[in-house]
Length: 142
Image (cartoon, rainbow, N blue to C red; front, side, top):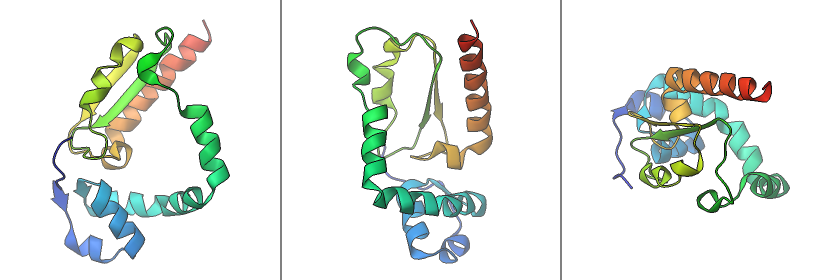
């Protein structure tokens, strides 16, 4: 894992946040500017509700948890790996090891992004996700 570090910090904007949002931002974000902090603050209700909904968490785990490094065969549909270059929570390097299991994957490691690249690199993530959705749609119509 890369060492925990912050690349952009707006102390004034951080001071204006409630304690939960400030703690989450300081723990996860490497870009802590006003725009990014506003986005993480807008997500707070989702995290609060999901964290307390254990049935929902269990359902998500059952649906989305599988051993990606032990697939019985390669996943032949479009896939997208969006990873933060400065993600100190899960890193990005280990994901490269499973890429052969996803022959139609786009693999993107985004600078100035930690554990929440979709919050810190919005435009780039939106472009990559849009392109991936186009590929999913085209694959579904074949």
